[in-house]
Length: 212
Ligand code: TMP
Ligand code: MG
Image 1 (cartoon, rainbow, N blue to C red):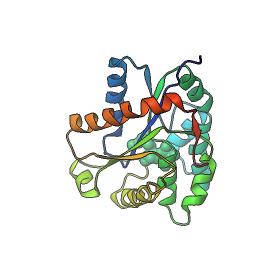
Image 2 (cartoon, helix red, strand yellow):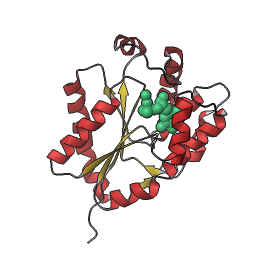
Image 3 (cartoon, protein in one colour):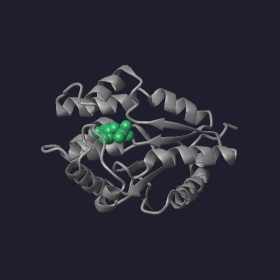
């Protein structure tokens, strides 16, 4: 009998919702429960493509908007062989941002439809669970200043938040909305519960393809 695959779990949300903290805590919690788990994040700035993206985000370079969208997508595709291998080995992947950020951020720019933005990521490994850390812009503002990277302004984040709400209407994706205004442990408990709930199904169904 083939050994059981790992689950593909994604955390999404606007900046300052606590994704990175929560991804780290989830990996720890899964390992403590005897489930092998690893953290991944997109963009992965360590690759050649990732370095182009990183320079763009740091405003060290300018890239045309369609071009950078395709680079973000290419950065996911280049990691697909690694992702599939780990999942097949029974390792659960906890991913800090995925194609949903790709679509929400680019489509928040003028002239980009959700449809156009989704195309390049069609067929990526489909997450078993996508948790959206929901935090309204007013509460996010209480968490302090934005950083200095591209996209880190309240007007743009508000547009991104709206695009995420649209994306969450897609019932082909297993979305769960998490109240990110709770304290860190409260958010962590919700995330852990949802994650443990998807294991059975993930182990008994093959990995799907996103948006197909
Ligand atoms: P980070 O702060 O999580 O490293 O993400 C970097 C920025 O890149 C963040 O503002 C979201 C944005 N982004 C995109 O525009 N498209 C994408 O596909 C991804 C993964 C992130
Ligand atoms: Mg950031």
